[in-house]
Image 1 (cartoon, rainbow, N blue to C red):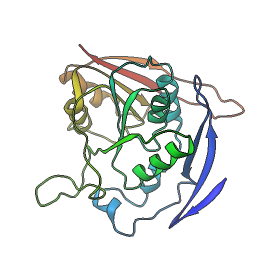
Image 2: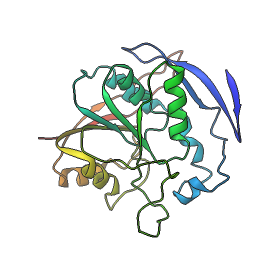
Image 3: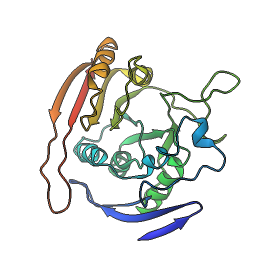
Length: 238
C-alpha cells in the first residue's frame, strides 16, 4: 500500500519476524524522499542524502529483531539506539519488555507512534539520542528535534543497535554514548553488515570495560530476500 504524506511518499507492508506475529510497518517509499522545511534535520547534522535512511527497512534491523524475539522477557530496561523504524523495539514492546526507542531524526517519533498504532499496541517510550556532530544550543547541548522531545536518561541493562557502525569513529563517540547509558552490569548488541569500522569500536568498548564475542550472520539468498553478510557483536560487562 502506498500513501502520501506532506512532502514525501510512504508505503505500508507486513514484515515477518521469526518467533513473533507479523508486524505492519509504515516506511518511506524509497531512498529518494526528503522533507526538511524547517532545517530540523540539517541542524542535527543530517544531510539530504542521509535524510531518508531512518525510514527504510534494513536487513540488519531484521536480524536484530529476530534476536530480540528470542530474548526472555524480564524486568530489564532495554534501549535501542539509532532505531530508525524501530523494528526491534516494536518486537520487544509487543512481547511485554520494558523498551525505549531512540534516534536523532526529526520524524522517527511520528513514524514510531504510527507503527505502534497500526499494530494495535500502546505508545512506546521514545527519547532523542545523538552521538555524532550537531549544531549546539546556546547552553552547549545538542539541539533536539522539537521542544517536545526529551533526551535519554537513566541506565539500561541491554542496549541494542543495528547498522550503527556506518562511519569512522576514531574518537569513540558511540562507545562513550553507550557507556553513558549502560548500567554497571550490562549487555550491548550490535548487528554490523561488515562496514569495516569494527576495530576502533572494539577498542573503545574494551576501554569501557566490555568483553566482546561475535557471531557470523551470513545468509544465502532466497526467493524472499537477497544474501546477507554481517556479524552479531555482543559486548558484556559484569
